[in-house]
Length: 407
RNA sequence: GGGGGGAUGCCCGAGUCUGGUUAAAGGGGGCGGACUGUAAAUCCGCUGGCGUAGCCUACAGAGGUUCAAAUCCUCUUCCCCCCA
Image (cartoon, rainbow, N blue to C red; front, side):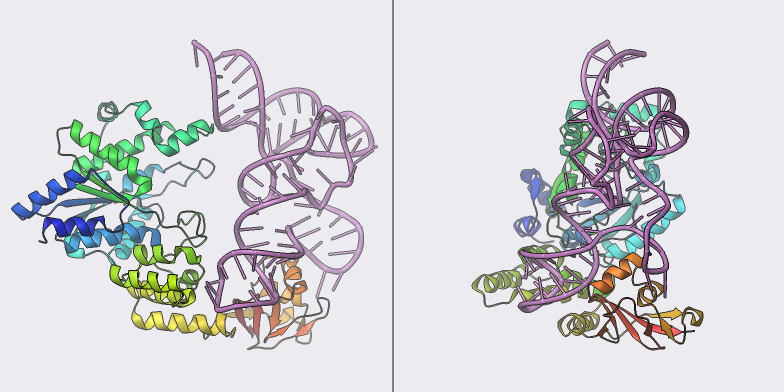
């Protein structure tokens, strides 16, 4: 195991906060002297099966901790998922069945292990202990927290002030998370800054129940491709870990320049010194941001795929977006022969049939705006039927291509 | 239990007092175009549906008043706040 000093430095790298720092030092000292790894907790709700780059931030930190010799306990919040987190009041989340949860958990761990060291990771489901509790247990544990304390939580107080509803069970979420920490006797819990309150609740409960309190490490939240809001699937600004390499590449290219370094630090595998170098060169104008983004995109794709696939994703990008040519693989769409009259069709209908637009209105707009092409020729007359044959390539806007097959 | 406020298009939100000019301001998002080192930024345009025409559907739901209702009336559902 590395020395305490080295470990502290590495842990502090790109983290937001360590609470409290002195306790981390103590724990590390003990771990080193007894040569006993620390138990690092990381919890996740398997509500959606797809992980995105935002999730990768803590995973990366966990991997670093594993490399230092520590052990990670990955808690799958299957219990939480089963009752359905109602935050965001309109979209009452569909209750997940245990089968779905199992499936989500599986894809989740598969993706997580692209980053984590499997040999140093324990996986636990929190239903193992939460499902067994009865109402008395719940009341006893809930008694360790006060409403005033819970209302301190930023999003609760905000919602309260704005007159938005807060479900009683939502109040229990921090409590449940805290119980997880107690159950697995976590030494450290890692999570995004948005989890700070919940993780601190874990500290509190551990202490109240006579355990040594966990140290809380918060990590920066990664903004999504819009560059403003945190990355999240529901906001549609996420980059999924299972997305195709070409998609990931393109999405990375679309992040605002201002976010480049943050992405390098939080999502790539580049070393701090490499990142520093890039940062300097960018500042001096020696390095073109577009070039840096290409490097970033490849570096990220290499984590989840391979160097080769990263390359070909880049080639694809150049081909389609820089040179504005059609991509290598274009999906084929079947068009029924009976839709044609002497192999001619109304162009609006053609694009609808090809699935490139959702309604005739949208198709009209597309054509009127000169965004519809057949074999790279813009359609100019919306009323005039066009003739098509198998193998023709339709294009909507700059990036949607479809090859026709007349049946 | 009592009192008050609210529900508008994908989302947020104006309009409701003073009915028609409202497919419904504005913003966000999305889409298209121009530009560019980029699917960044910026700028411009479009943004309910329907085969090309005027129709249809639409302001929580159901009725009603009216020549005409997002706007007025009644009931219902749901949400929020305050007092207890």
